[in-house]
Image 1 (cartoon, rainbow, N blue to C red):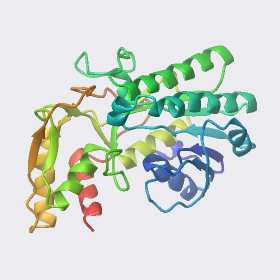
Image 2 (cartoon, rainbow, N blue to C red; image 1 turned 135 degrees about the vertical axis):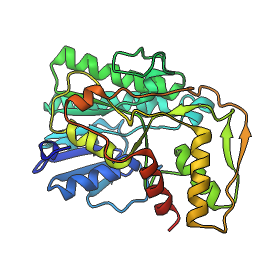
Image 3 (cartoon, rainbow, N blue to C red; image 1 turned 60 degrees about the vertical axis):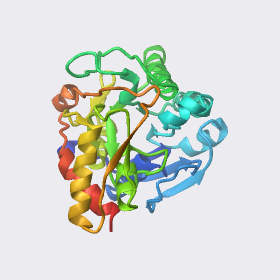
Image 4 (spheres, rainbow, N blue to C red; image 1 turned 90 degrees about the vertical axis):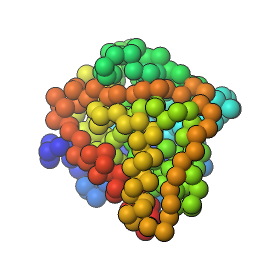
Length: 312
């Protein structure tokens, strides 16, 4: 990704700013010479030290949103309750944050005439129905969480059409890297590494044949930098383009943990399949590539980086 996609000198309002992606993005924006105003409820903060001020608050609070958005050049809406498992057990949990939150934030952008970037998700697609998923793939969400992301994704579409707003929709596939949560709120890679380092078996739900398309955090941040400098013609996918099965991830982590910490003996165990789990996600990122974005970190490189970070 060239210098064309490096925003500088902007004032950016970032919701979900203390989370995994938000903390990486906010810090990177500051490093590039931007001013960042952050908002987060800090329920699931990443723990990464922030290089910008982040206020505590809820994205459902329109008054607070309006104050923080004043004189900003763009709003990036990352705030969401993201746990698929929790959304299945407690479906009301993500509803208010992921629906009312995006509505309130969009309204703030509309009233103050501020460009808007929305964090959608590959989960909006459900399981891959073709060789890979491009942006025209049906939106067949398979969990309550995914359904709320479809709502936000399509609400952005309607606001762009109805009000002529400047809105970019970023559909990231499975992102991983340092400071990702390793509890029930986190991703499978972070969970597996934590279990392996604790001497516990990595828990694989189902038979491990489920496949995901992974994206290292550096490339995810580059996707948002592009969204802050370019105008998207509809949603844009960002992913590595090479699905990896859960059982293969466990094997790779087993090997890496053994190299880094030979005293650890990583293993795995199988559990019951998870309800609402998508069997396969496979990203077609041709649209992003045509705009100049390319993943720069392979899955194996990113996995080794993460394991070394998590074990030091």
